Each structure stands twice: as C-alpha cells, then as structure tokens.
Image (tube, rainbow, N blue to C red):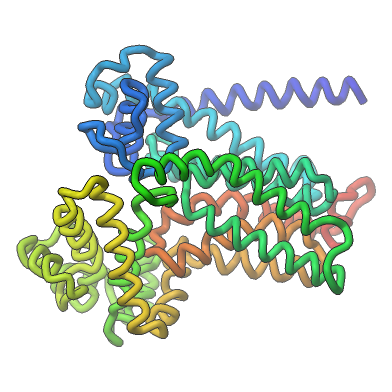
Length: 474
C-alpha cells in the first residue's frame, strides 16, 4: 500500500507539473482592462501605500472584493518596483508575470475537482475525467478566465473546494470539515460578495434537510456544525466589513450591489414583444443564432433601433440621449439600451455624490433604493423575468444542477445534493438579484464537471472490483 501511495503521489506531481507548464502557455501580455484593471489598481495601491482603492488617485474605497487584489499586491511586492506607475504593471511582461498567480488558482481548482469527485464516490478514471473536463472548459474560456486578473477563476476554485469540504462534512459529521467549509467560503466571499448571501441561505437549507432526514430536529449535531460553518465564515469576512464600517459607515462588502441590482431592475422593464424575444437575446453565444431562429427572431433584431435593440450592450449611436434619460432617473426609455442607460444612471449618481466623503458608497446606496422601488412597483414582472435570467446564466446551468440535486435527494444521495447546493444557490441568487451575464455562472461550471462523469459512471454496468458504481446507485 505504501508503494502504491508513493507511485500515486509521484504521478500526481508529474501531472501537476505538466498542467502548470501547459497553463503557462495560456498567459499573454494582453493588458488589464475593465474588472481586471480595477483589481490591478487595487493591488498596486495596496503594494505601494497599504491602501485599498480601485481609484488611480489611491483614495480608499470598497468597490471590489479584496482577496484577488491582495494576492496581486503580494506579487508586486515580491517582484519589486511597487513605486512604479500602474501603467508599468498593466501591460507587457509585467502583467504576464502578475497573471502567474492564476497558475496557483488553476492548481487549487483541479485539486478541488479531483478530491470532490473522489469524495463523492467516483473512480480514479471518473475523477480524472472531471479534471480533464474542467481543463477543457478553462482552455476554451482562457482569455477571460485565466489570461486575466479577474476574479472568476479564484471564485471557481474556492467554491469548488468549499462544496467538496461540505459534502465530506455532511457524510462524516466531523466538525473539522464544517469549519474548513466555513473558512473557504469566507475566502470565497472576499472574491465574490454574493457568496455571503448564498452561505446564509445554504445554512438554512442544510438545517432543514437535516431536520427532514431526522424527522425532527437532528440529533447528530448537524445544527451545531452549521453554526460552526457560519462562525468560520464570519471570522474570515468580519475584518473586511469592519474596515468598511470604520471608513464608510457601512458593513457592506462592496459598492457594487446597487449598481448590479439597478441593471437588473432596468432589464425587468421589457414590453410584451421584448419578453417574447428575451430567449433569443439571452441565449449563449454559440447557440444564439439557432435559438433566435427557433423563436421567430434573428440576431439582426438585437441591433440598436431594431425590435430587440434595448438588449444591445454596445456603445449607443446617440450617447447624449442616454445621458438625458439617465439624468432624469425615470428608468429605461424606448429605443435605448437597458445596460447603457443603467450604467449612465450610476455614473450620474456618482457625480451627484462627488462631494460626499464616500461618493461610491452613497451612489451605490441610492442606486439600490431606485432599483428596489422599480422592483416593488411590479414584483410580478421581476419574478416573470427570473426564468429568462436563469437561461442567460449559461443556458440554464443552475436549473440543470438543481434538477440533479433533487434527483440525488430522491435517491438519498444527500452528499451529492449538498455538494451541488452552493452552486445552485449562487445561480438562484444571480437570477434574482443581478443581470446574470454568462460570466457570473463560470464558478458553477466545475460542479457540473464533477457530476457529469459520476452520472455516466453510475449508468454503466457494475463490474467486479468497482465499488464506486455500486455506491452511486444507492
């Protein structure tokens, strides 16, 4: 057995080195833009002055979650030259060097996928297939997932790790797994703040499941374990929320909740004709043309000025018209992009609060109030649009994972259901409270990569010496 383990460890090291070498070829000198540039700016400010700020002037804010910028800051300090300009780090060989932090996230993601699959009863072949699948998806998405300083890869690694730990905690009942789950979820919250709400909902769902299985309050301390999980999450996230409370007077984790909710509230304001075309507008890119044709639309209908033009996210032909509507604050207008109008409105709010001690915080709070007012004015429309946003999130990945979780519960494979619950919870949260662009669903993809080989393996005939397949049928 010792020899077998030694050989297995050697194989794992060799495979890991080969994968790291392969991933390294994905990294380019492409400059940091959009969210990645904000993470870089925050990391650069942390490295040179110890201040967290996504603004070039270094004024403290809380516009992004801190973990990826903190890792970037450590990398800058290790390399040296933190007093160089942001532009020095934003392109060329310097940005490629900083992107190498993603090699660690990819390694953690693959370890999480392998360990989760094995913990759920997969054979080595099925677990290897899961790792292969997640690498295939990462390769396809590499320009925006790996060759960047964005946060989606880190979120995927942490969500997968937390889900695997949670499944082990549910199966074994040992508190160390639950505490580990809480700590990793806490790190995940510092990458994607929405995971905080997911964690709270997850805790409630786990307590209900435990009570259901026990036909009453569980007698196996799972209720205590869930509380330990929440406490561990709080230990990780509280210092950041307290920092924000001290500086800005709020215990929120970021200044983007209102901005995102406003986008969702604006896109709720569809007409009946636009709603019939939302399945075309929100279809994943590779299947958009056939889906549009199937629903009686065409991709041309998504151009500005056409029947579905308000779903277009491109820069408008008449920015002044968008700005006038944004200044008025009356919501989206006919013929103008939902996305561009909502974004313009947020920038108007920032400008109006420019004199405040924390303009981004004040603007985000007002954006949230305006969004909630629109939603409360027509909650039925908000709920009606939720299936469309579930569809937008990678073709309904949330729904498919949710169905698998329900089947697992019916077959008393609670560990599988528990493993999937954080990803399903994230998808439901995004569908209800955001505009759920496909990128928001990327952290959920590894869960699908773990489950698919498990399902296929369970469908194959059992053979002698194959305990995993038998276990999957229980």
